[in-house]
Figure 1 (cartoon, rainbow, N blue to C red):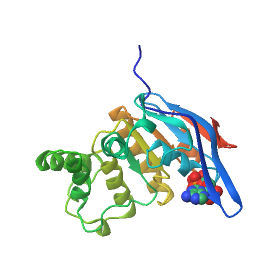
Figure 2: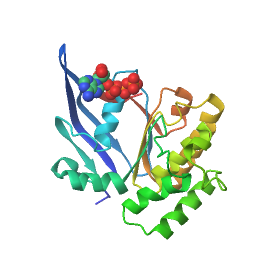
Figure 3: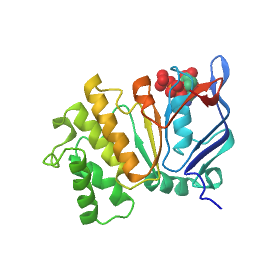
Figure 4: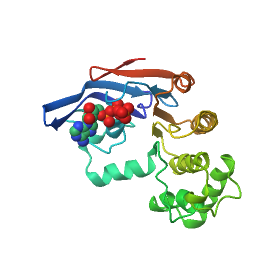
Length: 227
Ligand SMILES: Nc1ncnc2c1ncn2[C@@H]1O[C@H](COP(=O)(O)OP(=O)(O)OP(=O)(O)O)[C@@H](O)[C@H]1O
């Protein structure tokens, strides 16, 4: 039998209570990420991209349907087991870097590894190597406030890759950068994801960036369809 997909959302539904009544944002949406596949999620504002990423990242539970992580139905797991998967199996990159301002670039990348049980010396070595990969050798001791926007986002990407997750989820990962910087940082992100053989789901409003991925999907009436 072939290995299970790194990530599969099967018939997931998510509804919210609003003043106007119940809003069903996802209505039985299906999406499978094959091993090593990089999928772009391009859909108009408010159609449920972040909601889908929150379900995929085990940050929220669907109201119906199931999310499978490496074949395991995540709905059957308790919060501690889901947190453990989030910590080591899934990397997250957001539009705004969300780095810890009081810690150095190196510490921001080493800390999530140590939280996952890696010894400090090994975590520091991996952080140094990732910073070098992203052209940031020499910036190890800088706090985020002393880095440019592009550099901050590179550190955030390096942090997401630090535990060698199977799956990367990103919500407008370069949406906060100017066009030229966004282009370069995005290329580096794709190269790193491909280099590690990870599967990725990346939401973007930028059609040029979407075209560089393996497949484009969109959201229509609460379902995932080809983009
Ligand atoms: N916690 C919540 N409570 C109520 N409504 C919510 C909640 N989260 C999201 N929504 C609603 O669900 C819909 C989809 O939101 P979501 O953030 O997933 O959209 P999006 O496609 O990511 O939008 P954008 O591109 O603007 O970030 C929106 O109408 C939003 O107002």
